[in-house]
Length: 164
Image (cartoon, rainbow, N blue to C red; front, side, top):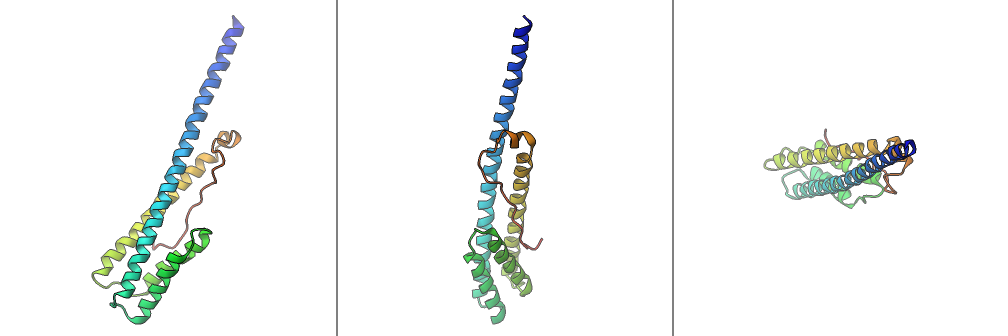
């Protein structure tokens, strides 16, 4: 009778561990999906910001030097490839610096541009928060030992000057 209780205890422990491992693997998968969605949202906000800056530069409301600086920075941000991310981060940071360096307080552009800049800040923060959560979960010992994250690459944060 003792052997059957021992086997039952081992079976319950294995069942609980299997449930935990399955739940954790599913959570990691959901977090990776959230990272992908947050990255897509950030990409969309960056594209909208560069399009707005290019439109402002071509509107003829700024002096020619400021217009040229903004147009060049917006074009470089749009043309920067997402991989390697360092190039994209540098181009987007240069666009932020160009916006701040030029007098873009022209109405009605100021409000729309400030909103676009704020949306980029929020999208980047949200992306980085999800990445940190994913990385924290993936650093747990059981996740690493049993490779519950599969072969998914470890997500990275995006560091750029966005005016925050």
